Length: 91
Image (cartoon, rainbow, N blue to C red; front, side, top):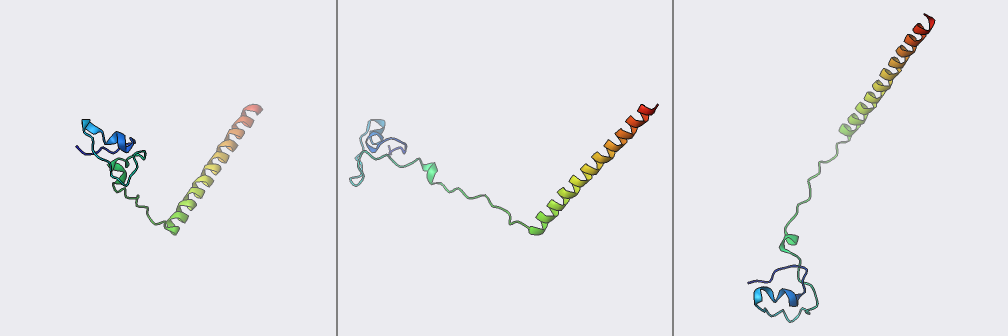
């Protein structure tokens, strides 16, 4: 049985499954063992798309246009509502 890699000290890890495995002489027993194998597996960074300046500019322009349209629609609805209220107040 091999040594399981964990947060145990070498002395604790080397007493695995009732067998005592001799620790390497160059590593003191008070040091922890190596991390689990998963730590050393490759993790590839997420590929990021290169930013397209023109596409980003176009997106900002569309957002500006949408915001302007929303404000104009709100203004027209408010003015229509004010006209209706004035019409009801006169009658």
